[in-house]
Image (tube, rainbow, N blue to C red; front, side, top):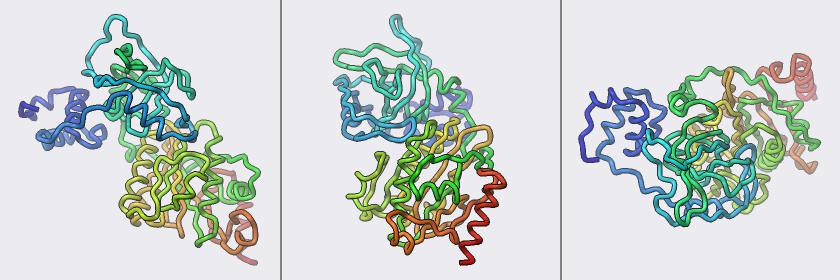
Length: 401
């Protein structure tokens, strides 16, 4: 950037132009900053190097082919499908925000599906891919903070030369609202929260899941820890939950495996967004968990219902584990972020604790609940007064034995 930026001129600039400058300077999280803080960040970073050049479509499509081996839960489910792209280095570049569509350009509307490398597609007939789907560059995804499942619209240019897909020129609307209005929305941490009141029904005949659903229920926005000693069945319980949750409509389910055995990864019913073995450092494990939580926060802030599954919080620094759990919330008149994680013991602040008994699990072939260590905060909001009384009675009987 050749010219020195002036605060006075920046203060007169519209927010969209400031966002563009911040993106070019590589300012992290610029869309969450208030205007004064954003200007400070731009001035501080004006001498920084610009972001790396956008990858062409063919690289993005190869990433999609390699990284998606199965279906993911909710609206972000993947498909094992190869979509050949372009060798044109200009593919998917984001024009200036004020650029008008040219003659022959059309407008597209559909559902966003992100790829592992940060770019994505507008799926015109979700969840199945089609040859008419529209490519979204990683710069556009970052600029508009798009998440899988967002419904967007905007002008589209035709594919160039050897490109297979048309490309989005700009994002005009996100979930029916102007893109600028969405970008200027209230920060996630400032959104009002309430206790979970809508139970997530599992609808399974699996004995472990039936016990969880009726004795340790959880809802949209719950903080759930599955706790127990080694070999109590924590991972197996979460794996069974994952299978049930991915079949529920309207939930954006993601999975993070942190500090797990590599050979266990293929056993999960959905593809993890990240999988680190127990050999990875605690900081690396914390980073992948935080990335998944941030994605879930963005879904919830847009009015969606996100569920993040984490196996396990055991090796994370305690502060990182607490941050991950604390992010879960039921937003008043809005979306929700539910976090369900395994750990040796509760951290505090959970709304639902699912305690497992290693000795009972050893007697059977499925994870068994230990009611004396389990609990649900404000259970009456999820299952009514009668259901809450039944849970209290069952727990009292277990403690008296």
